[in-house]
Amino acid sequence: MTLRLVELSVEAMLALLAGDLSGASARSGVRLTDYFVDDTSIWLWRIRVDQIRKDPSTARWFARAVVDEESGLVIGHAGYHGPPDETGMVEVGYSVDPRYRRRGYAREMLTVLVRRARTEPGVRTVRASISPDNAASLATIAGFGFSQVGEQWDIEDGLELIFEYPLAP
Image (cartoon, rainbow, N blue to C red):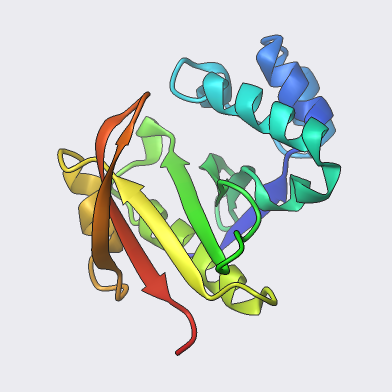
């Protein structure tokens, strides 16, 4: 399986926020699905647009459409919550369209994100924050070498377990 991550510009995200799926697709160069404008995704575009407007240099870190190169289908979105922090940590975020779940896409998205993090100067740690009730996400990170390093309370998601994967000693 080969996945390609396609950057979503602010203009594409604004089109998604307006419910303009065809406009967002035209701006991104790939055919986005209705998953990009449903309630599970739309909040993300609002947050990312605000972050990019505050600091345009951060745009390359955020959510991208994920294309399965074999089928040509957009199967979800993936990226980081932002650029590396002062300790060199980046947090991953990925979501598979429900129509394409349970096919190994989430694991491959995580593989692509970790691989990219390894190539970025200054990135030393990859983090994943997961609800203790999210068995699918917990299974996705299993076997990658992530270790649980703590817990946090997220206003939107409630209790999350914090896992980190060191990229360098």
